[in-house]
Image (cartoon, rainbow, N blue to C red):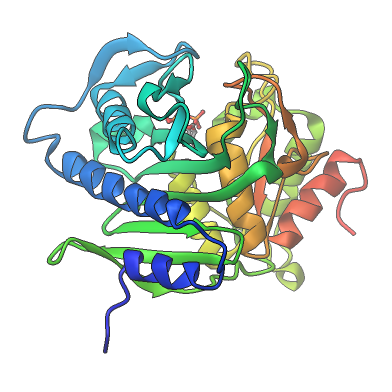
Length: 331
Ligand code: FDP
């Protein structure tokens, strides 16, 4: 059986677009390279005593772990040659990083969350890197736009295996790292998210800050009703990438709603490098992503670290969530 590496798959996919310059292909391959480097650092961080706090906070006031900072540096360095990228923005940097050597040539802007699920770092839990690619725009607010501006998005999941999932708008494709040859190999092409699942992922400890509609939806999922397949099972890992990956494969729903008691009226997740890239993947796989009222990809981003509530997953559960928000309840 011939092995289809990530690079081979990307190059073969490029042939379907005769006008392609090859730049996007190069850029996507670089995310594969960065993913391998981050995976290596995560695997040995405990041995090298690189776990724990960096004793700094990011722009959102969240504690930065040493590995958040290291993964951010790896990603920045990965795109610092070849003239592909003019701007990078990340959860870990207050302002966008400008690649001064590529100001004129770089056709792309990239956005990433270097280590998603940071609270899992010190306990050897599931982690992820989320990325998004847009065409470069000029001007001081070059990152502003809507989620539909994304031309590619993906994530790397660091679990028992390291998995890379991406889409360029032609379906969602899944690769698994084979450590023995140091290559991501195609394991599933054109992944389809089940239209309905049996699990839900939410931090229920935040219940007291939720709206009555979100509470009612959660209660509904937990009620016993064999006819509709309830109760659902709770599956929450503390890593959005880990939880989304399960939902991509098995169906179900993840939500991080507004939480007024914790001072998060817009929820916790950031549009540019968390919600919109995963929304792009969800829709490409046949699922949905919403705030509860509005499609995530339709949201006009007005600030680099802008947050919004997120409900993402199977068509059936996301639609049901929206019904509860409108006060309609279950059909
Ligand atoms: P984290 O801040 O720990 O990096 O990115 C936000 C995120 O992780 C998600 O991955 C995760 O689902 C969520 O926050 C966890 O937040 P709570 O601890 O509030 O549940």
